[in-house]
Image (cartoon, rainbow, N blue to C red; front, side, top):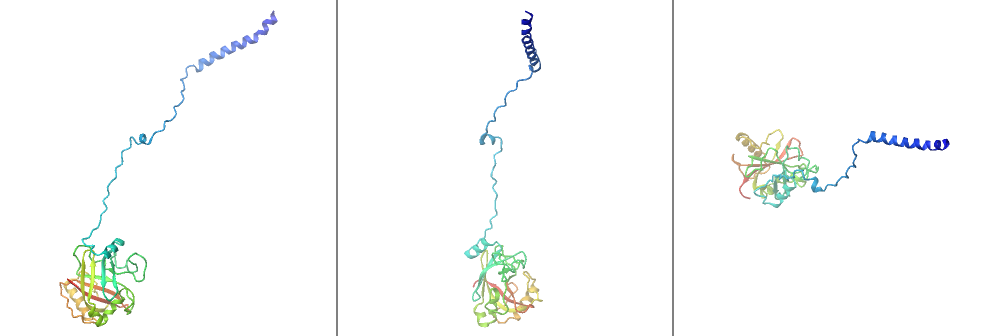
Amino acid sequence: MIAQRLSIWPAYLAGIAMIALSVYISAVYGNLPEIKPEPEPVEETAEETQENVPEKTEETVEIPVITYDSFWDAEIKQAYNANNDTVGWLTISGCEIDNSVLQGSDNSYYLRKTESLAYSVWGCYFMDYRNTVTETDIMDRVTIIYGHSLGNDKNASKFSKLKRYKDEDFALSHKTVELDTLYKPHYFTVCAASDVPVTFDYLQVNPDDSKFASVVDYIMSRSYVDFGEEIDSDDQLLILSTCTFDDDLRYVILCKMVEEK
C-alpha cells in the first residue's frame, strides 16, 4: 500500500509544478498590451501623391527679337542670321567685292576671323568699332571699313583689288561703291585713292570741322587719280583702309555719300 502511494507521488508533484508555472506566467504577462500586426502599406497613385503639390504654371519668357525695317536684301538677312555682328554689305563692281561687313567690340576681333569666326589670315571686312550703323538712317560723319591686302598685288584677296584704283581708266569707270546697312542701301562715289602715312590720324568717325577738312584735303592731295570730285563739310564719308607693302603706309579709298548710283 505504501509502495503504491509512492509510485503516484512524482506525477502529483509534476501537476502541482505545472499549476504553479501557469499562475506565474499569468501574473507577469497578463497585463501586457496586445501587439497587433502592422497594416501592409497601401500603394499611392500618382494622382494621390500630387494632391497637395501646387500646380506648376509655365512662365512666358519674352525673347527680344531684333527687327529691322528693311531686311530688304536676302543676302544681308542671311548674313545677319548667321552672325549678329553683321552690320552691312559691301559691293564694289570690278573688284570682286560683294561681302558682308562685320563689327566687333574693337578693331582686332575680326582681324584674323572669317564671318563664321574661323581663323583666316585674310580675316573679313569689318567696320570700325566706334561707328554706329545699327539705328535707322543714322550714320556717322565718317564710316570706316578695314580689310587685308597683299602688297601691290591687284588680284589677290580682299582689299588687294582696291589697288586697281591706281589705274585711271579703271578708277573713272568704277566710281560707285554700295554699302547696304541693315535698313537700307547707301551709295558712295570714289573721290580719292591714296597712300597715307600711319602717322597721319585719318581714322576718326566724328571729327570736328577742322579735322574733317584736314583729312579730306590731305587724302585728296595724294590721290593717284583725279576723280573730279569735291567734298563739302556736310558730306558723309566712307573710308576703305588697307595695308601696303610698306608698314609705314596705308592705302585708302575715300568716298562721299550720294543719293543714287
